[in-house]
Length: 238
Ligand SMILES: [Zn+2]
Image 1 (cartoon, rainbow, N blue to C red):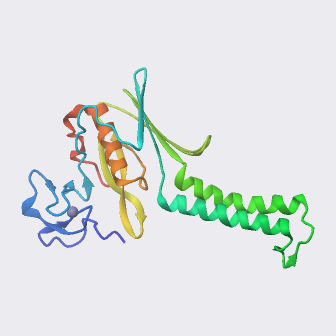
Image 2: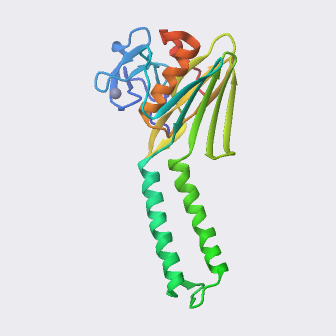
Image 3: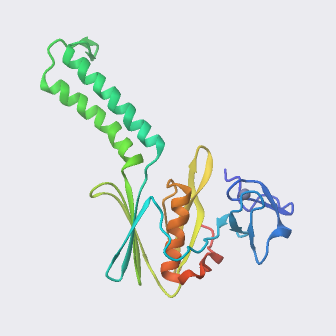
C-alpha cells in the first residue's frame, strides 16, 4: 500500500519523498539530503520533508497572517481548481434544472411536472445543496492556525461553525515537519503538516497546495524554534 515505506528492501538507496526517484544512501549527510533531481530536503527516517527556515519577513500570497496579542494567526483557504470546476458545473446544472422546472420540461419521479409547486423547487434546492456543500469544501473551506506559547490550535472550517479543530499543548520542545499521514491524491501519497510535542501529535492540511504547506510548516517552526529551522530532525513514525 505504502510504496515508499521504509520496509522496502534496502538496496542502498531511498526513494525521494517528492519525486520518487532513488537517492543513493551515500548522498545523505547526517541523515539528510537534498534530492539531486527535485532539490527537496528530506531525511532518511522514512519520508519526511525537512522544514526549511523562512527568510525574515517572508509572506505567502495564499496565507494571511496577523498578530493577536501574544498569538500569531495564519489563515488559508483550500482553493483547488477541482473545487472551482465542481462549483461552476453544479451552478450551471442547477440553473438549467430550475429553468426547466419553471418551463415545465423537467421530469420528477418519471412524470413531467407542468405546474411545479414550491415543493418541487424546494426539493430541487435540497438535492443541489449537497453538491454545493462538496464544492464549498474544496474551495471556500479554510484552515486557521493559531499559535501561542503553550498551545497550537488548528481549525478547519467548511462553513462557519462546521468543521474540525485540533489542539496541541506545546511542551519544552515542538517539532514541525511535512510527513505522510495517510492521505493520497491521484494515488500519490501527499504530506501533511505535522506538529509533535511531548509525545502528542497533530497533523493537518494534506490537501493544501504544496507551497502553502511548506510555508505554514516553516512559519510554525519559526514561531516556536526561531529561524534555525532545526526542529524537523526526527518525528516518530505513526
Ligand atoms: Zn526528488
